[in-house]
Image 1 (cartoon, rainbow, N blue to C red):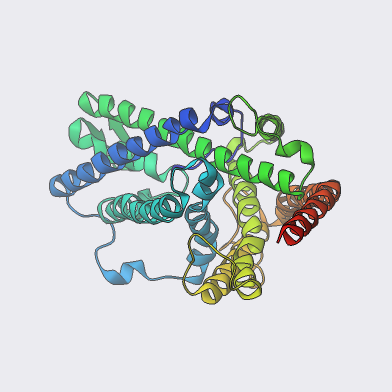
Image 2: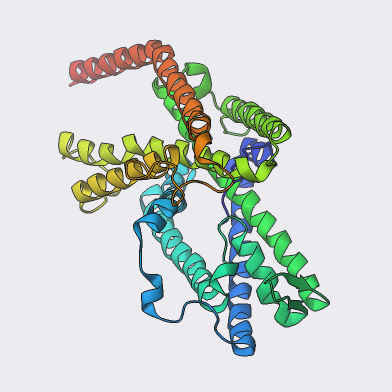
Length: 382
């Protein structure tokens, strides 16, 4: 719910990522408190709303039955909401005890996310009529409807109007929601920028990207590059908005698909690497180990591959871009335009990745030679 903006526009997350980790970490921390406050108060409000207005949504376990159409529509967003818990690894060298702190932070985040997201979503589905539960604006719409218990009303068509304390609390919830979104974007940019910088330092990208600021200890070069790229994406979105008669709503889903697919596709290499490295280097010392590495790698890789395909060609192979799978606002005869919108940036990113690997060849060579030299020195000393 509270992820970075799919538009990728420049935001305070960029300068926050440049700050030292000891300073920048307070933005994600403040966002965590905002989540607890927002979702906790919303959950209580849902209960109050239910007692006052009754239950109007799902009422039986059968109402939660899974359909293939629903699975295709949501698998990408579900996987997107679950990846990223490993980001604390990128700041492991700045922790006092990474061997203890990283597994603890990942486990705590997973449990908190299940509770903080699962309980409010369940409340929305149980309390609100199903025709009022939407995808993108669902949470904000739910806040407006539920907060009418503090002041306001709901029209027969489901439109909620807040008044008095309901309006005051609604505005406060909106501020918390913005802080939640901002902190999530900051967390992602801090973690992903560090990951890219380390890959440049190790030779998987140009060595220049591996430079860390001696003052802040952050990858300023990558931070600036991220800001430039996000600005370019924002400009492209605004241009498409001006050129389209349907407005921004039509392309929001397409841009969201790009944001989700680019994130998920990166894990197609990450998940198999877990099992591969476990089998190739079984005795290599590791601070912490994931159980059932083979099952985790295979199952998650299959899910990510399937989700990525559905984001690019919705409904394939059973009904590509048919009525059951086509994103809102798009027509069937626009399927090739949609495909180009999704596939074009992905191809560009893959080309950039290959180019980065080529440009990092010199670094990999130097690193390899340095490792051989160090081993020879140790052997000679022994």
